[in-house]
Length: 220
Length: 277
Image (cartoon, rainbow over all chains, first blue to last red):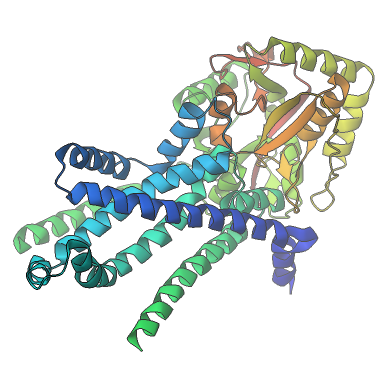
């Protein structure tokens, strides 16, 4: 009974749950926007990376290796407190830019890996049969690409959600920040952080669930 | 390939068991592992040296301590609960607040009350106008008794279940100063259940803002990023604690380049806490 009361005091009392929900909203917003822009930018990067035009190929290669090889927190701090410090951009915007840049590099690599797994002969066969380049991509490459890339893409999303937990460093009150504040105020860090972990876990499972559902729909 | 892998695994195994064995040496009876909150701008090694020097100069009969640094209060508390450290060093008001959890007891050691830190605001060095205004307001508040009243309301009488709200003044058209709050150090700096920052430091600043005719905007920030945020103009004021001159030590041991401190407005001694036995 006492433990239930403690839980109530930590997570619900005095509108505490609303604050947590608000933090969760910020986390989801930043993740979703970064995923959208990251995927678009990442596809473009992959297009350059596997393309025939050498300068763009090198640019994409360098970009991917720098971004993938450095911690996202460093990039975030560098952009917010360095590059964009004088522009007066909102921290949320800088966070979305950072995480989009980061996700883009990962998406570009996962797309390239999936492309490499495809059989080149199929596209060649389609071209011989009179399909245009675009048609061959749309009807032969893309459906297989989606199927191969999907599981890796799913784990990229889950990773992205967890990476966003560092935005507290740039004055954004996200889920992690809210949980830390609660832990300090209620003096119960163990329970509070376990609670926060469960919320992140639920979010990840939601993503898994969505992918699973779409898989099953395709199967029918 | 398989053979190399197997060899690596064996090496790893040997290494790991080796580590486990050497770590088991029991600490000597009079040695305590002490947790402290790391300061912003000094290395942990320098803090350790300063701590030892302080103990020596003040001639404190403190038990031999191995100091371990934590980023903030919650991680330090977890360190204490998981027995990573045996005692934690906190300010008396924080210790009183923590005693509300009913899990900790203070270590009786009278020599410790000699150690104390002062609290002040930190601003950018080129922001001399703001510093002058802060100093003037703090002096006024000291002389007219407002400061004592704030200490009573927000520290002495503050209970974990009943933290008073801070009224943030709103003056139309007045310039805004941005304040970085961490929510990491109750009852000085904390965030209420509904997400609004509160605590003594915030109350202090709200009162000052009223006196100097500026608006304040409270920004929640991770404690590790405060110095960067201040230096890059993203925020204008942060809360700071300094070791006072009293013990033959410079007050500015961890003062970063380009930062200026206001007049100290509160002084608190240090207490050590351990898990209730």
